[in-house]
Image (cartoon, rainbow, N blue to C red; front, side, top):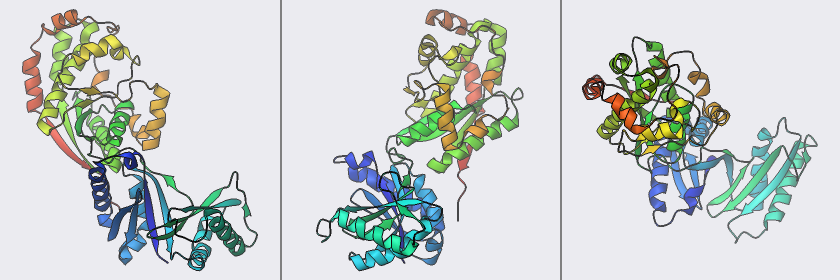
Length: 397
């Protein structure tokens, strides 16, 4: 029996004249992800990607391939399906042989049919009724039909290329194919918010690199390793990512000596933004990404964000800006970063924290504080000491 994976488009199906560009990138991403698992053919038709194993290694790796396709941005739903000839004898025989393995443990099921090939002689209700009867026969009373709230929905799709039978679809990553929306640099702190922000922008097709600011020896090597692990988790979706590590220790020490304490966080963040912009220009990124959420902490009030943005000329994307902490935590659990994000290692933003930070700063006063120290020289030194860590996902197979 031939088994394939069906990957369904989402908003990609609504694209106009540039649709083929998005589809080509999506197809290439799937092929490159599946290459270590075996030989697969990847074709497109009717807003669906068909992934078919072409050798024994690929046939053995269909489960791993299914996982890979679920993590491809641009695919909203994924199904493992058996292929049948476009006649009812073949469809019913395939349904009897293939579907029962997905019904064990279920108490109820429902049969549906989707007939995009209108030349097929039976209607969708007739197909679903026949398939339902066939499954009831082979299951011999171990499962019942429930058309309102079934445990499993068995779907027969009649398409131009053939008939496909599967036990329902599973969610895909959604969004747009990775790399179709330009490139941006993520400020990756090691907390809960910034990995979520990076994921959300990558899901919109933005290729990302990351920059991490450390304050060694005030922060540890374990804190750096934690950030690299967060990047690796994001690579489940992006496959690769460069993490640029920049030390801001001297900048923080100089701020502590020269500037008023309540401006410390704002001045540090302005310096980090300038450094991030320089890194972004070097790596070809045209925007910055942060995990800030308005009002969450003192440096994320509207006034503070305005002062921070004034330090750079590059667009700053904040996909978490309207989310509360609970919503961000839910998303971090979904993408697998939460457990790593809460590991108890200090980051640079928790060092020398002011007791009463400014929440409604005025730009003129901030600039006056900034003039008290030679930030340009310190930032030049920080950039000169930058270290780049190439991060890759773990390869299956």
